[in-house]
Image (cartoon, rainbow, N blue to C red):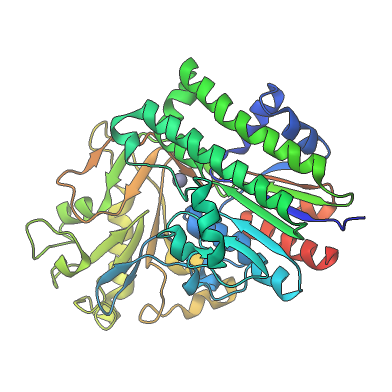
Length: 437
Ligand SMILES: [Zn+2]
C-alpha cells in the first residue's frame, strides 16, 4: 500500500472570487469536488503583491524582509545598479529543501524563485525568470526529456503585444505541455511532495482582465477553456492519490482591472525630486547626484541618500524631513488624464518590511527595503522605468495584481481555516510536512 502524499498546486494570479464563480458555474467540476470537502477562502498576498516575494513567502513561511526576495528588481545602492533577485538570495529553507532534508522524495515544477535550482532529493524544474532549461533543472539529466516533450518554462509574452489570439494559443500549448509533463512525472515515481505551479492564468489575466470583467463572451470562453484544462489534471491527481494524501491549492495574489500606468519616476522628475545626467535615462547610473529620490516598481521609493547611494546627496540628518516632504507631495498625486487621486496611502518602509519590534530602530543607511512604499488606489499601476517621456499611459496591459483576493484550498482543519495570507499558508504547509513525514 502506497504512503500518503502532499500535493501543492499553485495557480498564479487566480482571484478567489473568479475561482468561486467558476466552481459555482460548473467550469471546474473536479476542483469543485475537492473544494467542497476542503477549506476554500480568500487570503492576502504580500506587500507589494508581486509573484516573486509572494511565492518566496509561501515556500519559506517568512515575510519578504526575512527571506530577502522583495521584488523582481532590486538595486545595489553602492553600485547604483539594478539586479533581479533569484533563489540564491533566499536566506531561509524552502518546502522543497525541508522535505528533502527529511529524506522525502520531491517533485517541484515551475515555482517562481527556484532558479537556479538547488539540489533536492528528487526533481526541481525552475519557473519563469529562469534563464533556460539547461541551467534551470536539477538534476541536469532530466533536461533532454523535458526538451523532447516540448516543455517550456514560460509562454511568449511578447506575442501578446501584437497578436492576442496567437498569444492565447501559445498559452494553451505551454499549459498542455506543462500538465502532460507533470502527469508523466507523477506516474513515474511515488513522490512524497508533489508541487506544480501554473503561470498561464496570470499571463492570461494581464492582457485580458478588463474584457473578462466587462463580460466579453469570447474572452470568457477563453477563461473557461484555460481553467477547464487545469480541472482534469486536478481530477487525475485526486483520483490517483493514495488514501490519506493532502491537497493544497493556492494563488499568490488577486487581480484587478488596470485603469492606468503611472510612471512614478516621471512624476518625481516633474516635481523636481529627480534629475538625470543623460537625455534618455536607462539605468540608475543616469541619476543626477542632485536628485532627492527615485522609484522602483511598484511604488517603492528610495531617497537618494548620502552614505548609501553611491551618488547620493541627501544628508542623513535630512532623511525624515525629506520623507515627510515626499509623503505630502505623493499624497496629492493625480491621474493626469482625469484628475482622479492616484495614491491610497504612503507607508514608511519599516512599517511594511521590518518586524514590529524593530521598526523604531529603522536605520536608512543599512536597510535594504525602500524608504517609502506608495500604495495606489485600485486600478493604478505605479511603474518603475526611469524614463517614459510621459506621466501616464494605458498600454496592452489591462489587468494588474491585487493584494487581496488570492485563494486558498486546504484540508478542512481549524489551522487551515485560520490561514489569512500567503506567508501563513507557507507556515501551515511546513507544519503539514512535518506532521505527515
Ligand atoms: Zn502577474
